[in-house]
Image (cartoon, rainbow over all chains, first blue to last red; front, side, top):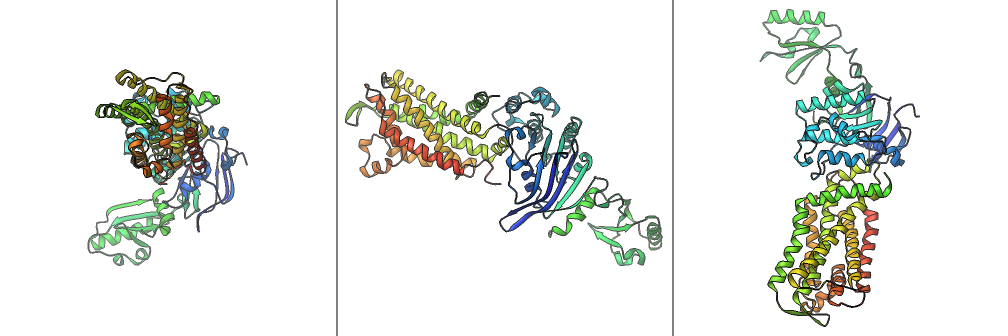
Length: 306
Length: 256
C-alpha cells in the first residue's frame, strides 16, 4: 500500500446512530496537492481527523505514509505536519520562540529563520503572537506545521476568514510547499483556492465522495455544456422565450441560464428573439461552468436550505 | 532531543509563559504577598495554635505560604491547562512527536517550581518584615510539605480541568472551591476560633492538612518538622486526583 502517501479504502465512521463517513476511497500521490471539498457536516473534518490520527474509525483501511494513523508513533508524527481548523497561539511567546520551541520536538527540523521567512513573518519574528493579525497567526500555524520538515502536510481550511490579499499571500506560501516537494492534503470552502492550488480535487457529500478529478475536469467540467446566461428585463418571463429555449432555460439567482451543448444555434435563436421583442439581454455571458458551479450542482440536493 | 533534554526545552518555554502572563504575575505572585502584608498589618498580638502561644504573624506566614502553593499549583495550573485545551493548543501538541508525558510534566513542574519560589519569598518577607524565624533543622519538613503539597494540588488541577469547560471559568471555579476552605482550614483564621463543626468539614479536604504541614516546621523548631499524618492525607488526595485525571483528561477542546 505504500506507493501512495495516503491510501484509504472503504472508510466508515459513525457518531451514535448517524453514519457520517459512508465508505470512502482516497489516494494521494507523492508531491501532489489534493483538495478535499464538501459542505459543512459532509464528513470532511471527520475524515481528515482520522487521517491525522486524532479519531478512530469504524471500518475500512487507512494508510498514511505507510502506517495506520490509529496506531501512529512519534516517528510517524515527525513526518506529518498539521494545520488544524482553528488554533490560537500562546500569546506570551514570540514568533521566533514558538517556532524554535516546535523545532525542538522534531528529529530533523528545518532552520527556524528560513521557515519564518517562507511564511513571510521575518519582520514579525520578535513580536509576541498576541500582537499578530489573524492572517499572520495562520501563517505562523503553517510555519509550525513545516518546522519538522514533514513529507505530508494537512491544511484544514487554511485561509478561512482571510481578506483577499492575505489569501493570495497564503496561496503563494502553499504553492511554495509544492516546490519543496511536500504532499499536501487541503480542505477548503473556497473553489478559487482549490482551482489555484490543487492538482486534484474530490467532493464529499453526506459521507460519500460524489466526484473526483482535476479542477479542470471535475464533474465532467471539461466536457460540460456551455452556459448562456443573461438578465431578463422586468416584466418578461421565461415562457416568453422561443420554444426551443424555453424548455431548457432555468432561472437562478435572478439570471436566466440556458445549457447549450453547442452554443452557436441557441445564441442565434436567442439574439433573433431579443431583437424581435426588443429585449436587451443585459449582462449576457457565454461560458463553461466554473468549479464553483460544478460544486454547487454536486452539493445542492443535500442542502435543504438552498 | 533526549527525554530530559526535551523536558527542559518545554519547561523553559512554559516557565517563560507563566512569567509573561500578567494574570499569573498579579494573582499568583503578587496577591499572596499583598495578603501577607495586609493580614500581618491588620491583626496584631498573639494567638494559640496547637496549644502553643505564637505571634499572629508567625501564624500568617505559613498560612499565606499555603495559599501561595495552592495558587501556583492548583488555581493557576487549572487555568493554564483549560486555556491550552480550549484554544486547541494541546490538540496541536498531540499532533507533534512531543510525548504527552512531557506536556503534562512540564506544566506541573512550573506549578511546583513557582510554589517553591513563592514559599521561599514569603518566608523571607516574614523573616525580614515580621521577625518570623526561618526553620533550621525543621527545614526538611517544610521543603517536603511544599513539594508534596504542590505536586498533589497539581494533580488536582489536572483532575478538575475536565469539568471546567471554558478558560474564563477556570479561575472563578477554582477560587470558589478554595476560598471558603481557606477560611475554615486555619489559613486566614486560627483554628481555635473556628466552630468545631466547620473544623470537621475542613479536615475532609487537603487544604487544612497542607496548612498544618507547612505550619508545623515553622512553629516547632526542633526535630525534622515532618508532619507525617497531614502529609499522608495530602498525598492521598494527590494520588486519587492523579487516578481520576489519567482516566478523564482531555486534549481536545470540549466545545468541539
